[in-house]
Length: 277
Image 1 (tube, rainbow, N blue to C red):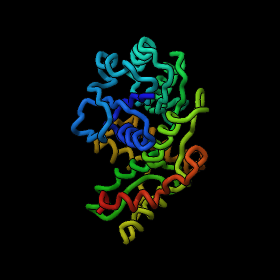
Image 2: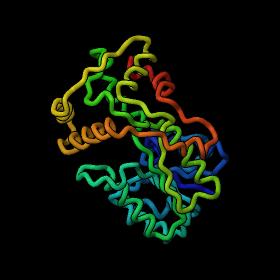
Image 3: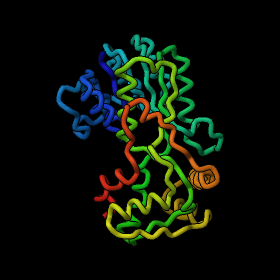
């Protein structure tokens, strides 16, 4: 079974390629920049992108399954072309924000992907991770330059997940049976507050990193000044405020599917300490 991995130079897609190769699954990688992808030996390359549907027929020809990156703008056309190519199996990366009605929520795009794939007649599986551990790299400039983190809601408790765990689940679902029609809510192995994440980064650095608490208004202003649209900045603050009152708890799906513990935030921080140094 050859699997087409879309978004093969993306944060998750590139890791899905590695996970499938490790499992001995033949891979065709869809990428606009094969050199930057630095793909493993033996991976077939299809030059193209979900953003350019004209490149998809050749990429889809002769494959049996697709790992689908979440690109809502052209997902309907992807589904049409995949049906024409006889694709049966689609594992789509989605997100835990599906169902969030806030106008700026990422959930609208994820829901559009799920709706199109679900209506396409495929044997589908949807992966819905929550917050990514890698999001905390947004704190890296402040830690490097001022030795502190400035943020709203130190008590906001999330279950951030390592990108490698998402990729491992995607590869497992593509390579094994029993996942058709399933929606997997993916999380990291622990609920951890924003202050706890900062403490873990400090532990990896071997020095304390102060948490400077901002008001919601100050946080929105800082994000807007750094380029965030105001509606997205406000939505993010609302999410943090929600998880202060409603702390997230781990779903256990990664552990159940992979038979191992997920990567903890402290482990992730140690592996990425150079980014904060």
